[in-house]
Length: 100
Image (cartoon, rainbow, N blue to C red; front, side):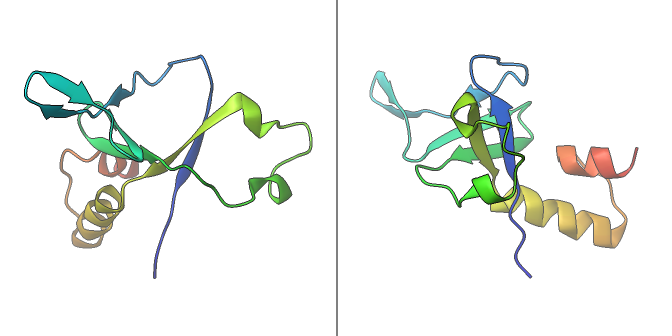
């Protein structure tokens, strides 16, 4: 079974302190495509250029133009699933949430 988790975060409000993961080439740094981000060095996110149609799932008063959408990296979800099934706790932030 495939699981996808997207986060909707308000634009202009960096409450999560996401850091963009840049690629270095010599002395210069460049964004990746799609842009990739890290949260607390445990969770990897991507900001894809296209999204499913969320308008049909959300209330009418939610304007998607006011939000940035981030997809959680597949490896973060996979590591979480592996540890949950084995009843282990490690550094992945999902695992910390599950065992609180």
